[in-house]
Structure formats: C-alpha cells, structure tokens
Length: 195
Image (cartoon, rainbow, N blue to C red; front, side, top):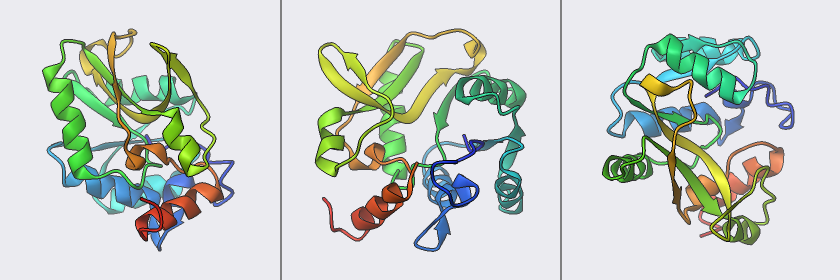
C-alpha cells in the first residue's frame, strides 16, 4: 500500500521519502523480494504519481486505486490485481521490516485456522521508543498497536474476515514513518543506537 498523501511528513510523496538516501518503499520492496512471496503489487493513487513511476521503472506491478482511504483502496487493489489466494498487505512506510520477519508472519498464518491475520505490537514497546501510536486497541486486556502488515483471503476481500491477532514485540514493526521524528528514529535504530 503506497498511495497515501503523507501530509504529516512534509517531504513530498511518503513512499519516496529518503532514509539514508533510499526511498522508504525500496526497503519494503527489497524485504518482500527476499522473502518467500512470489509476486508484488504496489497499490498507488493519483496522490503519488512519482511513486507509480518509480515502481514501474523498477519493474514492480502497479495497481491504481481511487484514493478513497486505506480500506477502500486495499479492497480495490486486491480486486484489480485479481488475487483470490491469501495475500499479504503491507504498508510502504515500514522500512525496518525484513524478509525473515515477513516469512515468520506467513508461517504463523499458515498454521492458523482463521482466514486472516493481523500483526500488532504491544503499546509498551512504543512507549520505550518514545512513540505515540495513531491507533490503539484493547485486546484481551492488553493494549496493542496495529503494525501495518495483514494477511487476508483475497477471494473474500469485500467481507470482514475473522483474524488471528499476532502480537510481536519487534522493533521492526513498531516504527512506521508518519513524521520526520519517525525517520530519525529509523536512522538511530539502523545505526544500532537503539536495540
């Protein structure tokens, strides 16, 4: 998912915002390419024409969506891509994600009976990082934050699907880039200043 405006970041198209000289989306695309996933679709909107061009130059398949919001665009992207199998949905603003983590999530999904899986991090991880998350849920008495990676059944994408809440205390999932401070935090983590 790479079609949002990125208005809070103030650096142009968010997927192309630079982290150590590379676009955020490049980190995510490379992690997916190095994982067991066999096909990548990038969902874009009219908000991100340069991102769409970057993806096409890099040989990634682009699926255009209407820019009506995350859920509506996700549904439209899956339908336009014609995916009927399980599909991982991942945000383009998760530059710390790794191929091993992606494969670990897939492995858990394949062992679960639920048709969908959502990833979360515990709120206390965000607190230790000095972050204030945008969304927060109480799940069984535990405060958790959506991580921006989900697996859904593509054949039933227009319906709400029962999902397994995978809660991981992984710093790679706790930092999605919304503001400039998030970029600086990613830099510190990548340099080993925060473990």
